Image (tube, rainbow, N blue to C red; front, side, top):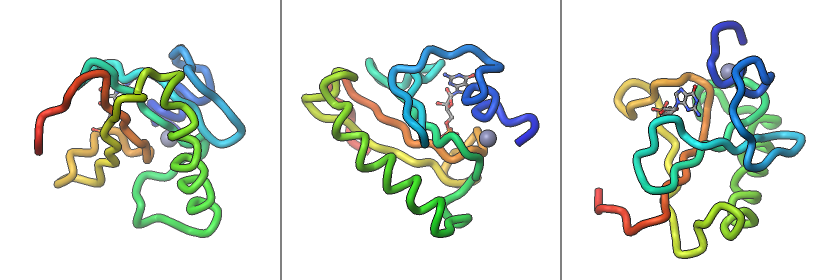
Length: 111
Ligand code: 5GP
Ligand code: ZN
């Protein structure tokens, strides 16, 4: 997807250290961390919203959620963390390539 910053990161056009990578996803640090530890899980294929789900995308989202718990120790999240997917305007989504935020490394404030 042209002009998508996360597609550019996935393609390696914008350098961003990958803390984890497999066939379907990468994990990077958020450039503006909102907690002591703040990671982004990016699917390697572009789609913006959960409402654009189809069978193939559902498999990717399932894979991301199955992988997150296997990374807890590696990412320093073993004491707990928050998982967030911002959706659209009201959800505060600023990058329109679906991604999962992982926030932790400290006790997070209540909503
Ligand atoms: P959203 O608001 O769309 O859910 O989250 C987008 C996130 O991407 C924000 O937390 C923002 O700090 C992060 N971000 C935006 N541009 C970049 C970038 O170039 N590199 C990295 N690592 N994170 C980015
Ligand atoms: Zn993209």
